[in-house]
Image (cartoon, rainbow, N blue to C red; front, top):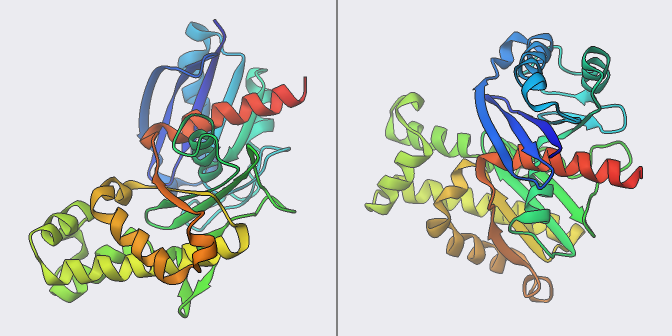
Amino acid sequence: MKNYISIDIGGTAIKYGVIDQTGAIVTKNQMKTDAFQGGKSILNKVFYIIEQYKDTYAPIGICISTAGMVDIKKGRIIHASHTIPEYTGMEIKKCVEETFSIVCEVENDVNCAGLAEYVSGSAKGSAVALCLTVGTDIGGCAIIDGKVFHGASNSACEVGYMQILNGKFGILGASSTLIKNVAKQKGDDVENWDGIKIFSQAKKGDAICIKAIEDMVDILGRGIANICYVLNPDVIVLGGGIMAQKQYLKEKIDAALDQYLITAIRKHTKIVFAAHGNDAGMIGAYYHFCQIHASNG
């Protein structure tokens, strides 16, 4: 049985494990990213993970999903936010391959999550899929005919940067903004609120929480509609921690799209929720590795 080490580098946690040739997760774990310590620290954590598994599982590939814009041919971070200092320019593929003599492939984390949903999740069988992760920011991925659309410079579908209502979509529609808005209106500290508490209170009839969620959904509806007018997806997959509230959100998001999309497009556009949860990045990184090496023969 062939094995692969898969590592998903997020802003808060690094999820990692071993995946076999059938795509099944053999073992998995996670650790804190400690992003503030910078790119070199993250690379050292990657090395530590590989050392943990390489002798026991004899991996034939290292599959990496990571925050930031990625040059997938070079496995290099071409842009990362200030939350991970000195990550831009990091040559992950080169460093891993030179250190361990194991083939390594690197892809953006949202692209990996989208690929996981296309191959074996909620977007399976779609012609054009738009995958969005809604968290402290909003990330996007477009998959067309089974392939991630990267654009001319590996920066396609960076939807969080879209300008909408005098602000960035990735800020205005994020769960972090929802939490800040509720705390402000309550005259409370942000630390005392999270998404779970807000939805719990909304279900009990809390007017402030209900209105804040409605405002977030309106922003999401506007942003998603704008992307649809360009991309025309048949499936939109929504992921991220906040989307665990799908029973509460589904009807509201559908209504927002009914408002902002013309009927000719809306009737061909289905909203679904991500199936792979926290494993999406690891699974997608493995699929990305397999796609590259299948195309290389």
